[in-house]
Image 1 (cartoon, rainbow, N blue to C red):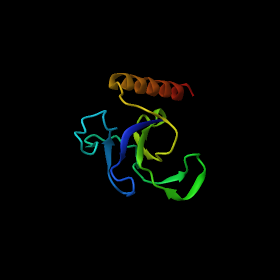
Image 2: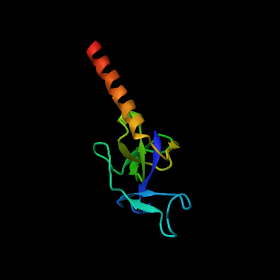
Image 3: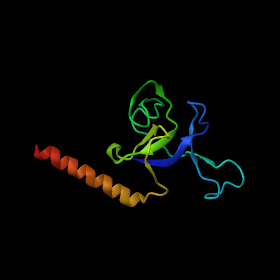
Image 4: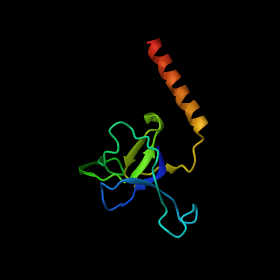
Length: 118
């Protein structure tokens, strides 16, 4: 699992939309808020659902906790999922789309091979 720079615009409002957020000094914030509109979206099915039934240590919780950050995972074919910002994971800054596409194609080929071998 990897964190992206995607976060809810207002972390205190659970239904706010998502934006790309940058650390001041690393992008062209020009003294204003370091947020950029998401023009491209790659959410997984049913996401964002803004509800985690587990805390950052994976303990069951009720009611569900608000999910404010976006992460990706190879097991979900790198589709986006909103998750708890407190979950421990690495962050990514850039992705080589060509390489990521080749990894996904290789994973799909292995899965197909395993299914046909049964």
